[in-house]
Every structure is written in structure tokens, then in C-alpha cells.
Length: 395
Image (cartoon, rainbow, N blue to C red; front, side, top):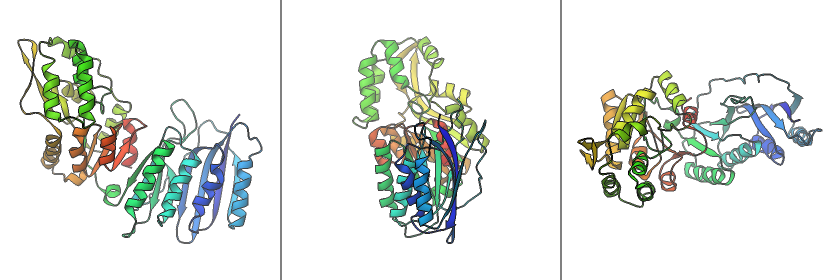
């Protein structure tokens, strides 16, 4: 049976100590449950909750840690923890301008050690590490899925090298790493703007309509290429829409009743409302379905294409101008202005190539479960967890 160990480390702060500590533990399969670290120019304090693997009852992992701490003149103690519910970690307010967030289903000390190493190699001063997720998941399993690392502001930070290093680590370890620099970490966000298809819902509505019309495969291929940025959005949209001509209007209601929400959508919207955010859907899809989501999720604004219906049948055309990538960015600005917000107070979330202008117009753009081109051309990406993980970026 695996063991839960609480580890306390304290002593004089020296550059590279945190990296060395995690390096000493990274060779072992250790699950991170919780962490809290504070550091200033003189002192270092770390508290860890670790789940040790089943096949190491004598804790050799911690022996190597004790040796390191002795060499570095650090005080180190640990003891087993038996719990029904894990005690909460201390959660002090710690206001610094830049943060790195690690997000995964389960984080390990290897994950944390690699990121701490990248921060150290960049010459940055790491001041605080804390687990910001619940220590127990919905099934009662002990693990940590979100960690926030806070660094002291420095106008000469090598931002791009750190971003590059974190990108490599994210790819190699298959975890999400979000680097919030300066104004991104401290901005007073007020408005969250979302794409709809494959962002708020786990489907492309036009593909669902095409399935009902018997042209699903043809339309899906075009949709995928358009979202990858391989086709012009306007012309590919008209081409797909023309294939739906003659589809009965009743199909829209059938599809709307079974739209699959993206994991975490309801939790995210509730969290945003609790924080006082305004919310909007700005979609290259159809307003019939976006308005259904507006009612279901409590969205404040909806902008999407109007699917033209004539005599109870889909005409194969759109009523009005097409909402493409450029128009999405314009609508973001318009909604923000109508509420009296600056664009730096806007968060935008999307997945397709037509979302790139909107994501790059916002104070914080998030490529969510996005296509490779979108991840490459936006600052932040979340690819593993549900929509509710966005809340970690806001606290």
C-alpha cells in the first residue's frame, strides 16, 4: 500500500536549492499531492505532501533527500500522514508580477523539478510554490493537478528563453505549462469571450448538421482543414453550408437538445459569474445553437452566423455577413467597449485557426485543446484538462 509522507524543509535560502531538492527526488516515482514553498533573500521553507510508490516501504527516496539537506545545512523532517481528508495547505497572499502554472491530471516531483530547473537556469528568483488544486479529486484519490510558481519581478528577465524552455518541457512531459508575465498575472480581467464549436462544446455543429443531411464525411474533411488554417474560412464555410441545402428545420432542435458540453464548461461559467465576469460567445458557427448555450450556461452576449431558413428548409446560405476570424476580433473589441472595459481586461478562448485574431487581441488568449497552428501563434495553451482549469489562471 502506498504511503503519504509530509516533508518539512527549512534553512538559509541559496540559489538552486529548490532545484537540487526536486532533482534528489525525481529519480523515484513520487506523486505530488500538495506543496507550499516560500523564500526570501535569507530563508527557505518548503512543505511537501508526497505519495510514495508501493514497492519502496523503507523510503530510500527520502534518504537521498536527507543526505542533500545535511550537506546544504538545511533542516529536514518527515513523517507518515494518515487521513480521511487531507488538511489544507497554507494559502498566503503573495503578490508578484509573474507566475508559471503547471497543469496535469497528476503532477509528479519530476514535473516540478524540470520547471524549477528552467526557472533557475534563466536566472530568475523563485519565491513561492503552492498547489492550487484540491488535494483529493472527486473519487477521493490523493493528487495535485495544478501548481503555481511565483517569481519576483525583474525588468531584465529573459522572457523568450524561459518560454522556449517551458515549451520543450511541456511537450516532453505531456503537461500544460502556462507562463503569465507581468500584466497578464496582475490584470483586472472582467470579460471572457469564447468560441463555441470544439471549445464550449465537444463538436462542430456544422458537421452534425451535415451528418443529418447525409454529407457528413465530405463536410467534416473541409471543417478540419479550415480549423487547421489550410483553407480560407469564408469560402470553405460557404462550400459546407451549400451542402446543407434542403435540410429540414426540425433537425436544428434535435441537435440542440444533445449538444455535448466540453468538460468543465458549467463549472467554469459558474466560477466566472462568481468572480463578476461578463461572458460572451463569438462563433463562426450558428446563432441558433449559440443562443441555446446562452440560456443553458447563463452567457451574457452571443454573436454567431445566422443560418438562413426558407419555408422550413435550410437554404444553404448564411443570412448576413460571415463571422470570420477578423470579425471575431472586432466583436471582442466592441463587446469590451460596450461594457467600458479595455481589451487588456478580456480573456479569449478558442481552438481553431479562425480564432487566432481574437486570441491575440485579448489581454489573455488561451488556445484550448487547439490545433497546432493555434498553439504556435498564441501565448497560452491548455490541452489536457477541462475548461474549468482556466480558473487556475485567474486566482
